[in-house]
Length: 87
Image (cartoon, rainbow, N blue to C red; front, side, top):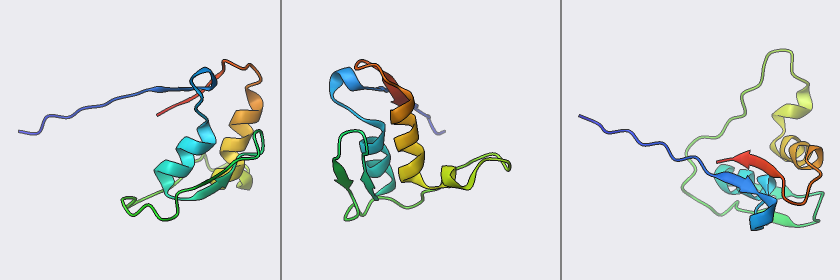
């Protein structure tokens, strides 16, 4: 019998993390963080077997672009101790 496990952690600016960095890492992609100017490049990461962004059918097309989506999330949160995402 399989035993399933779920672990969820908050991505908070106060701990030096960013949603753009986490998204780039999980997707194995290169994402430019427009808030900090940093580029997170995980294109050499080989462990990513599947990546997809699920959006409602009426969502704008830009939401299907990982870089634009997570930069919008980062921009929406203005506090220095913002909790921008969960992983």
